[in-house]
Amino acid sequence: MKILIEEENYPLKELESLFNDSSFYTKNSKNKAQARVNCVGYYYANNQVVYILPKVFMLNKDTTIFNTPKENLLNILKDFKHAKEYASLRSLCVYFYNSLKEFRRRHSY
Image (tube, rainbow, N blue to C red; front, side, top):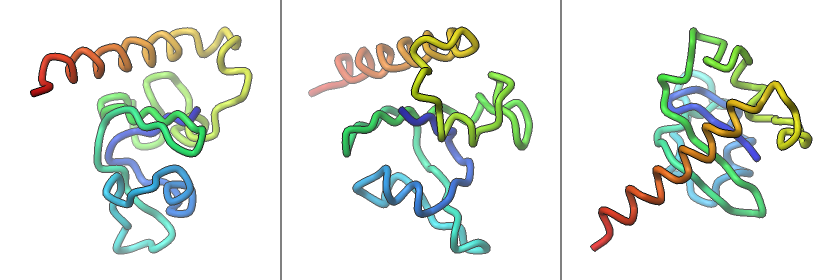
């Protein structure tokens, strides 16, 4: 599982490997090795779950509201499911996913 934050820069190679479509990110014009995530949501491809949280989850330039750098969320530990320090983040991801499902249900035509 990967967790990204909207409008934050990440290594371009990492985003290319996560997303099958470049419409999820914009290449950085100043640093060609970086790209900025330009959406919010849930993405599943290549046997990988990706949550893209809104930018309000950034506490400051480098740290998320979970008191961890955004890079740690990009490279989240395999024991995420059982690690106590990630309990609130796990719950948030479940709520976030369910809210996206509900939004889609209400707005499907």
